[in-house]
Amino acid sequence: MGELLPADDVFHRLVDHIYESAIDVAAMPAALDLFSRYTCSASPSYLIWDKLAGRARLGVTPHGCYTSASMPESMRALPSRASVALASAGDMPDAGPADTPFNCHGLSSGIRLFDTHDVCVWMSAKPGCDGCTSPDCNRRVAHVMPHWARAARMQHRNFELSGLASMGLAGLDTLDFGVMVLQADMRVRYANSWAEALVQADTHLALDNGVLCAGTEALQGVLARLLDNAAHGGRHGAAAAGSWMHITSGGQPVPIIVMPLVSRQPVEGPWQLPMAMMLLGNSESRSVLDAAVLTSLFGLSKKESIIAIRLAAGETLNEIAEREFLSPHTVRVHIRDTLRKTGTHRQSELVRLLHLLPGVDLERAGASSAARPRAGQIRRG
Image 1 (cartoon, helix red, strand yellow):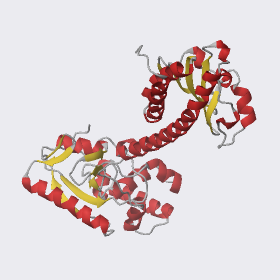
Image 2 (tube, helix red, strand yellow):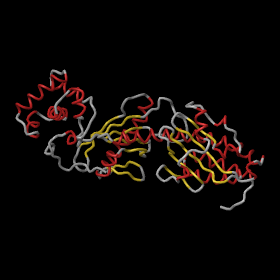
Image 3 (tube, helix red, strand yellow):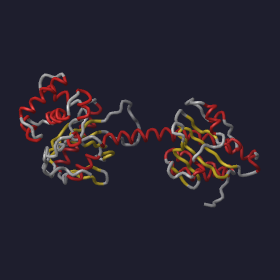
Image 4 (cartoon, helix red, strand yellow):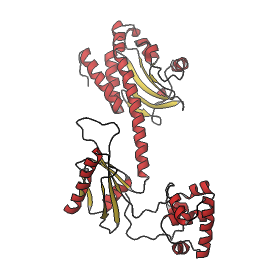
């Protein structure tokens, strides 16, 4: 800091920071500091405004990044001319900074870098010299602002992709079986919460610096062979590369299925991409069906839903009667009514239908707490 650089060097360093901030917002305070030095401006700020909620999502100054909760009061509103500019721009998704002059005067009023129906990105700064009439300052602002506008679009796209990825990964964490995405060298690029819990609880498996390792040479050979088959099967469009019934150190059977991952559009490049997805079955699963879905779709009573859930889980009529504290005759009556309401004629048809529906925990569905006692359950997280 305090280092005096020629203007061209400041500009090139500034552009580097601008595009780095499109990927990592933590780089933006340094970019704003360089921008202030390059354009002779003061107090530069960058604001991402949520047009639907009427508040700022993110504010950045040379001193740091601020979210809605931590933002200084001075950044909780758009620049002075923002409301006028938004009214004239409307909700056109292609609206950009072309109608705003890239000069110090426009910057002092707030320059719109990016604008869609739901978000607007603004940048502003105070004049730093001669009331912002210096031709050199205006030239520098005009020189650098297109880079900010382009980076704002890149940042918006990256935020969208990151949000979609986060929601997708959150969805995978709700699954009641393990999911791992691996490279050919067995490096794990992703594992959902169940897969992580299974590996932590099983002494036959481990993650060593992000690489999936087996406790025995035999199991290591099996995993390597499955991945090798995925590498070759993926090129020929095979649906599955192979499967294996793994017995955990706790004695629980865990089916392992490996699927090749093939992009619909081939990706060429020097980086090693994920090439296989490993599915690890959950033999301790208690998530079968959602009782609320059964009630909504078929009008089943709570007890009918629970009995249907237990049928789909593979329990016999006598087991259901014992665990729900009912007589076998009462269970038969509930099953008969459930068949009528679901339009099925046999228990096998009912089970096949129910297996198409979303899953949920049996206890949350209202099953009695004494149901399905387990010993040595795999520890989660």
